[in-house]
Structures are given as C-alpha cells and as structure tokens.
Length: 237
Image 1: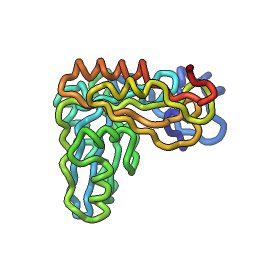
Image 2 (image 1 turned 90 degrees about the vertical axis):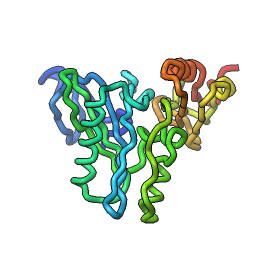
Image 3 (image 1 turned 135 degrees about the vertical axis):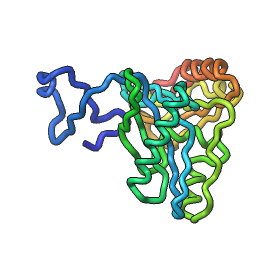
C-alpha cells in the first residue's frame, strides 16, 4: 500500500509470482486488459456546484510505470468521455466534500470504463490546465477555499503535458536542451525547484498547446527528444 508514481505496483502473471511480491501488507486486484488510461479532474464547491475538465488520455512509461505524457482531449468516443465524466462525478458526490479530485480510470479492451484510483488534491494529470484552460486546477482550488464561483474548464484546441523525469543517476539538477524547447510554439516549461535529481524522479513538466493535433504530436516528440534532466556532474559538454 502507499504506492505513488509507479512505485509499489507489480503485475502478477500467476500464483507463483506471489513469492516475489512485496514484503508487508499489499492489495491484490483483478487484472484487466487495459486499452488506455484516462483521468478526469473534478471540482466541487462549498455550495455543491461541480465542474469537470475534459477527459485526459495518459500514456505511461512501460519501465517506470508513471505518466510519460498525456493528451487532452482524449482520443476516445463521446460515449466513453461522457461515461468517464459521470463516473468521476459519482466518486466526488460519494465523497461529499468540497475540493478538487483527480479520478483515474481504465478503458478496457472490451469497452468498459472502470475507476482505478482517486487523489483528493491538485494532480499531475491536471497540470495542463495552467496554460490550456481559462481556470487552472490551482485557480479552482483557490476558488473553493474562498467560496467563490467555479471557473471555466474548457480547453481551446489541443494540449499535452510531458513529464520531465530525472535520468542518468543522482546529483545537482542540470537541464539539457532548454533553448530548443523554448523554440517550440506553445511550449511552457515548469521546473519544480527540487535540488537533487534522481533517475525516475519527477523534476518538472512541459505543457504544449496547439490547435492542430498532428502538430501537437510532433511537438511532443521534439520535446521528448531534446529535453533532459540529468545530474550536473554527468552533463553533456
């Protein structure tokens, strides 16, 4: 229990795999065949008003088991989007608390939409909203705390968020390829201020916005190809 950012998660292929499972308590869940992973950021005001951001499609790093990048709106049908939003609102209604909630879901290969987990806070899957929406998830949290009306959550065009994850060992933070990134239209760089980078540690993110989905996909590839967070001792000349 207590897993986050891909830590504390293990896929088991059969009973024999239990021998290599974690020490201490753990939870066994039914394995499902996942077609894609989705997320909905939902907000509930102190007056009971609710709002949801467009459904997000998350693409995971197969080794680190954390979000590599995400796309919004998700490449799913309107029916799947409606189901995901309805499930997210059901979760929020069940919790009966004001605040902001990230509801992560599985879209299975047989077309089911299942709730995976919920984080009762601003969340990595909602960072795109800082640049892509009239009111970001952080704006919404302030509105809830101040008992102000909730803000608009629509996305103009297409947006993506690319996680910046440390690689190449541990040490003081060095950013490679920043000048190239800043040449990409619609690119916004966020560094979290952590003093030490480690392999697999989230160090920041990049938001990309573009009215054209194909161009956005190209900019995602360019960002992933050119930008790296490495230890200063191992930086490239």
